[in-house]
Image (cartoon, rainbow, N blue to C red; front, top):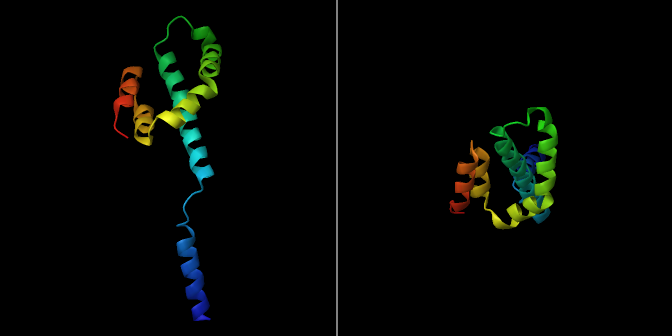
Length: 103
């Protein structure tokens, strides 16, 4: 019985070490890039003036304008370090500077 417990413990311990599939990695990248798209829109709207009454409409229009093209360009053209840097940025100037961060 002790041997079975040892084997089960080993399987459980190493079960979490399975590498993610390419599909999981791609989906994770798409999710990060969609979050970045939302963050860029928020940064653009943060300093916008004269749209207080239509903030939701402007946000929706900007998200639609950037759309899936932004996400796909991010997935194929930005490193994880660049995306992380941009997500941490508090303004568009800093977010734009993140594009020069080495991968």
